[in-house]
Length: 152
Length: 152
Image (cartoon, rainbow over all chains, first blue to last red; front, side, top):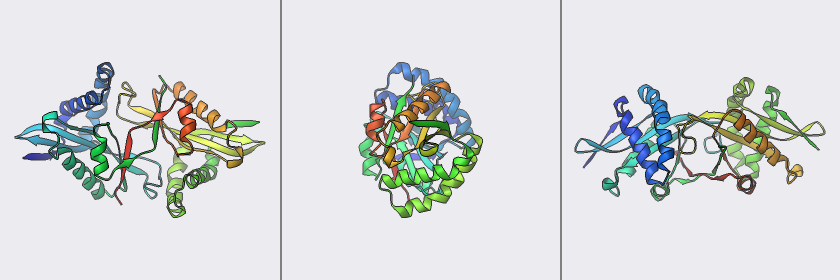
């Protein structure tokens, strides 16, 4: 029922919308997301064009209904990946509400893990919304130890 | 009683030891930390030399007894820092056991937050050990939403 394809530079607006809707769903204030929109677009455009940002779009009858993005980020060798100075990072996991609960996010996450293995990565990370957490836990992901501090 | 100075390229061995002892304290297996040692040293050396890795060493009577490292890492503009495509990252927070509970980590964390503000950063992140978490919470840090998956 669903088809999956790699993201392409022409998906810039789509991915920006997915990110905004993902964070809207998780309760982030509209004002903050409005402030993030152009900086995120400016960040994504060159990375999507170069392939530094990669991932997949899920489609239903030729129309995009979800997606997932991925990067390989520099990271100090760490007990989770002692021999590697990088980790995979997954972001912008989004499925349109009417297509949820049908395995789309699971399929996208499987593609990301496969691609991580194909690239020889030992470890993947992501930041989960409360809604997303149970799915990731079911797929074997465990809670990280990250903390954050706003300086503004 | 304690003095603080900036890290310097000559601190390479010291920081490697701090990282290893920090993770030993948090219960990571010695075998994993042995595997991490050389890759971490290879990762740190150029970054410490260039200043991409910066931070502070705490000293007592001229002898180093703790330290903290920091980086500014590329990150997609995010609700926690909507207008910025980077965040501060703190790592290798370590104080020797006999000097704990005397404000050294608090002083190092204050230097990191001040430096983050000086560099105009809106957001800082770190990964906390269970022992470190209460201190960071007292300093205003909140739990992040990160999850991780080992692919090996």
